[in-house]
Image 1: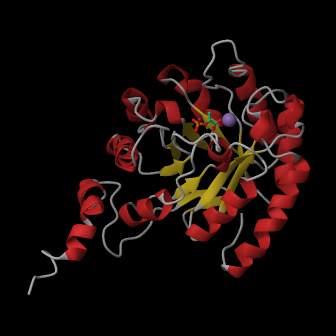
Image 2: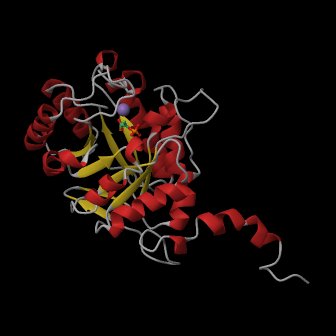
Length: 294
Ligand code: PEP
Ligand code: MN
């Protein structure tokens, strides 16, 4: 008789064993029975078994827009607010963020409300400006393998939200996390935000299976971005239900007080009514799954 290691089970597990063995990641790898990484902020957490929603506009556009969105988030009992002052745009003619003015708006709204900020850092040059106003620093899809930037955020002492490149494997995502951790920062959150496939029915194809596969390999929290993947408000609630059901630690979702006026990603941003409907919609599922929303 064949032993288990020679038989079918071993063969069927070959790709995972080869590419996603926790042993391949000295810092990000999850040892058997090991603890998950818990990200704790003032009044918010990620990775504690709850389902954490990060919501907000794609870009900070004005004080009024950012402040109005902050109040919407607070009304729904959320704490973590997204919004970029530095925006990576495909076209150099598109609005690419208010930069320092945007950071000043984030700082002002944080002072006036209780929201915490998740905002993107695109370049090592801007570390000194971005990091002081950020509670979580986002490294975007296009920068997932910007190794100098990864090393630099290894030294900031704040959690990093690392988004999967739209053309990158999960192994490459984990190795990018490993760069940040090796440079001294253990607080990394992984984000699946859709990958490029032949199918254009979603903006990017949401790889829901990234969640359980990553969670079996790493102790880091894993969240999904339904906005940049699915790309249309119509299917975003379904993607968030999938995130909840598959065991993601949370989601990051784009909302805008007036999506039709948004300077970036308005087409995929939930309006206030769509956001409220989505929150009601997932509330019942979260209760059924015994997962606390925050
Ligand atoms: C964003 O979060 O607005 C963004 C640009 O995301 P990504 O890097 O995943 O494209
Ligand atoms: Mn966006």
